Length: 225
Image (spheres, rainbow, N blue to C red):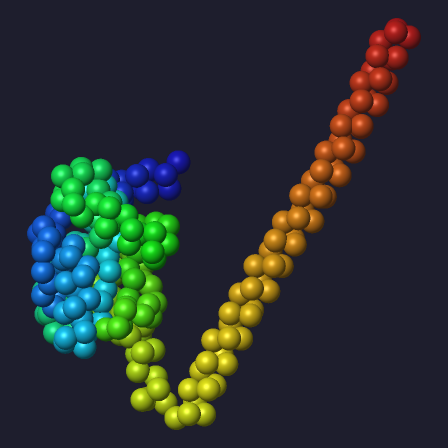
């Protein structure tokens, strides 16, 4: 009960956090949130900058508001973003007026394109539009920690120039091995789930038959009395 109350209090506090200034609806500038994805893509190519897409629920998502307050509204993030990244704002608010009507279908299309399942989701693209990775929210997030995570994703785009051919090949092999392990883990979990379901069904059948026999024994005992 105490944990539930603490969680409720946390999200209530998060929801009360001050929102960021409204993003641009047309055009793009480095480090300034914009809803204009085409303009952001053009700017990214011109400046050779990566794109950070913020899929948010700005007026209802507690974690989104938390990240806005602890990271994106902070001067350290704004100073970094102005020089290093093009930022795109894709909102799914309850108050539909927060997104111009003409941009709503485009926002929905972006959510589908990047298969966004929850908020916030931060998708990182290189200047050519290739997805490099994704970031999420953290209760302990700071501008510095988020920037470090972002740079960790961005560095992957520069590996060919930073690693030798042998090191790059090893890095790619590690990625393939990890992916194979993830698939094996997923298959194993599905197999375990299937076996657990079968065991549960077998148990329920035995339990049902046990109850039937107990009932029969009870009825005979009552008659004999």
